[in-house]
Length: 380
Image (cartoon, rainbow, N blue to C red; front, side, top):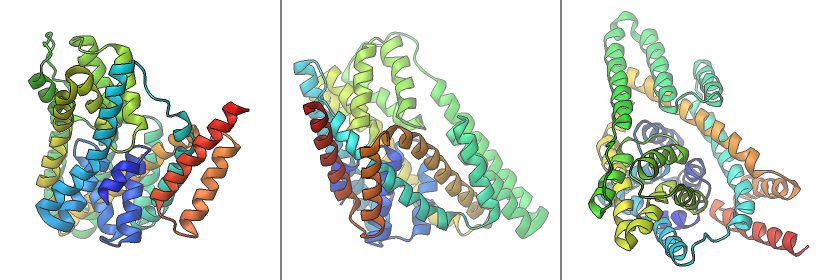
């Protein structure tokens, strides 16, 4: 299943999570919506690609350590193969393939899938008026560009504080202060680790390439645009391994191919070191996700046993959905741009909600419709 999703999951982390929710919760009923929300909150609290970490978490839940490895690897592998092939073509012919028609039809389908998932998950996550208020405030702050991790942790702390005070009054202040100290320490360490970088020129080699992407995968929060900032500062400005044009092309490949956006690293690895470079860069940037999930996975069920931790997780869950809604709004404005894309979005919504057509087939159909529309436009 994750091999198929990794081959067809276009649209970035929000779309990937919506596709996984459709398969795992709505269709197969492998886990409950409440459990899925807890995993969503957990993956938002650790560095790395959220959708890949969601796949790893679900693999661990379903089949232990073997499932952890199989689910994560199968979700990453198709994108790695596709991006490596594009990297080979780029090195050989000096240009990227044209994806305009494909993405033209896929984007409005993806928006519909994400909106449907948000609606279902929102009904489960927003349990009280207080959590609804937290969701609204987080959404507003997200539109103003407030740091995502700060919003997640802040929402969690608010919900934990309110839950603790309501249940036990001052007796719950001590665990709340401990939680506040831990959260503050995590924020400080992450920002410190993100700021630490080698300023001197580093000569290219496979070992430095692997270690660099291992560092990035260990500290990076946020979208592919945050990844672009890291790569621009180090690989272009500081070490001169890439040109600015090559970096933009690598970012474009990561954005328009299915699967994790972090396969930008695969493309860069191929440009710099051929097939060994592509494999090592991919391993470096994704390996921390497997480690973080392996460490945090057993802790997620225990969070529900403590009222303070459960409140914290509830706050993180609604904040995660709020940030997904912000991303979906921006993506929607770029995806539904004319009558054709609006029609594709409406038809997709009807097929998804009324007839429960598998979302993967909707993505495939949207891509075909987009290529046909693009071809007709150019023919006209």
